[in-house]
Amino acid sequence: GAGVSQSPRYKVAKRGQDVALRCDPISGHVSLFWYQQALGQGPEFLTYFQNEAQLDKSGLPSDRFFAERPEGSVSTLKIQRTQQEDSAVYLCASSLVRGVAHIQYFGAGTRLSVL
Amino acid sequence: SQQGEEDPQALSIQEGENATMNCSYKTSINNLQWYRQNSGRGLVHLILIRSNEREKHSGRLRVTLDTSKKSSSLLITASRAADTASYFCATDSSGGYQKVTFGTGTKLQVIP
Image (cartoon, each protein chain N blue to C red):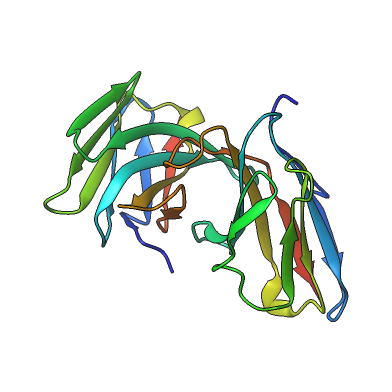
């Protein structure tokens, strides 16, 4: 596609609900990242995929957070039993190059509000 | 945790003036990047400077890097109202794969 696409753009969940956030990276991009951005802050790293392999999940805040990229393209970030502190914008980015830091292309994000 | 800190946190200038933002970071890096984020949107890459470079230009943007001081600056010349956005620096650690760590951002407002 032309850019990184994320869906839904907005999600309202009741506390305790499970949510799934989707990311469609740019076609052919090897690397995929998930970030969490709180209001007024910079993006915080959550996890990194190289193709279908999840190489780094050190940023996932708890075991309620789970990410997958089974075929090396589309990725899903799942949050189980959502809590109010999970409210944030979740950003997905993809990158063509692997192994060294390179330009990341971001989606518009999913704004999650947990009530 | 955020590796970089931008300074100032917020900046308001008149259209046509120059805007300077600074970024300080803590650990050795391979590269430093600057990104822009318009309200409610994703981040857009502006420029990348490698650790062995001291200055880089791209259009109205000028980036400097001082690895001895662990700091970088972004200068936007002849600012326009469309430059209104938040600006973030992002660093990758030496020996890292592609993981970058973003700073806290500078919110720039350009008044027409």
